Structure formats: structure tokens, C-alpha cells
Amino acid sequence: MIFCLKEITKDKTIYIVQQAGQKAGHMQQDDHSLVKSAQAGDRQAFAMLVERHYKSMFKIAWQWCGNREDAEDIAQDSAIKIAQNIRSFTFDAAFTTWMYRIVINAAKDYYKAKNRRGGREMPLFEDMEYASNAPDPERQMQDKDVLRIIHALPETLRETVVLVCWQGMSHKEAGQILDCPEGTISWRVSEARKKIAAELDLKHKGKRHG
Image (cartoon, rainbow, N blue to C red; front, side, top):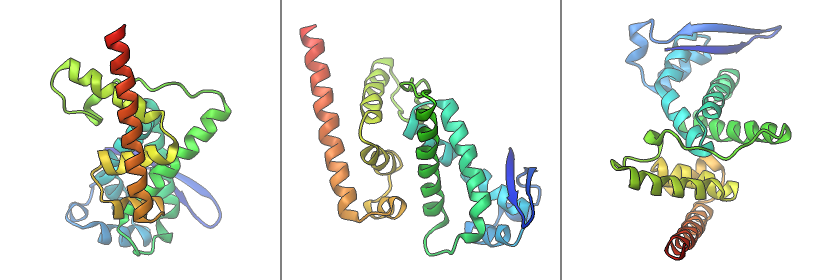
């Protein structure tokens, strides 16, 4: 897999193309070791780090926005921001916690810019691989209904649902990523579930009377 990465130096910005995994040793290293190497300027270590987590970055972005093309842009933006800020990572939390925070913030920034341009549209959720394992079309349509309801939730509830309900994170992990207390995460999950249940109930009542 090839990534276009952005390297910041003292006097200029350089765009580089780096293929991950060219050194077999990098593939055996854990995140901590790869981050250390990347902070020391090892481009291949950084590329391996991005390759290892890129699918998760894309998945969170897609679940957050529901649009494949936007999710690709957000994941690429996130990789660039990680490259720009990798030296500032202090190992106070897991690398993935820091990375997911960057993805969520990149998604917010992306849609702020898109809204200013008047370009935001309703998501299609055309690729259910990232949100549903349902084998039959009827169940997948039900899942799409849920996804559209979630997409219409306030931003704070939506991002919490993405991390807790879809990514399977604990309330503590989600709180670290979103920089809020566990109790706040628990409240958001509860509120989101109430709103989703209420919207589904209205939709089902409409079908019965339609």
C-alpha cells in the first residue's frame, strides 16, 4: 500500500511517497517502537504505522460521515496530520487513542469546511461492510435506517456512538479520545439510544399506517 505523506522540516514542507513495509523488521515492531523510530525520522517506520492502522482510520471516518469519498479524504487528512504531529506524541496514552482523536477532529474540520462551501449531502451508506454484517437485504435496509438516524444526531452523540457502539470501545477509552469524563460518555450513549429507538418507532408506525 502506498501513501502520500507530508513531512515538515525547519525550512520547508516536503511531500513524499513512501511504500510501507520495505524493511521486514518494521513489520515485527509494535506501535511504541514504530512511533519512536518515526519520531527519529524513519519514514518507513511511519509508513508501516499508517499502513497498520489505515483501515481503522478509514472505518471510523466512514462511520462518522457515511460517505466513502469523504471518508477517504478524511483518512488521508488524518495521515497527514499524524505525520505533522508525530513528534509531539508523548506516550501518555496509547498511540491509537491519539490517532482516533486526530481522525475525529479531522472529520469535524472537513465538514466545517464542506458546510462553508455548501457541499454537504445526506450519506448514502452504500457500502454496508463498515456498519453491518447482516446477510439479507431487508436487515441491511433496517441497518441503513439506523445509520441515517445516527447521522442526524448531534455531533457529540454521533461521535460517541461511532466509538462505543461501532468500534466497541469502553466508555473510558471513548472518554480519553473525546476528552470528556466517563460519566459524560455514559450519558451520551443513553441519550443516543433513546433518540434512535424513538425515531425507529415513529418510522415503523408510519409504515403500518402508510
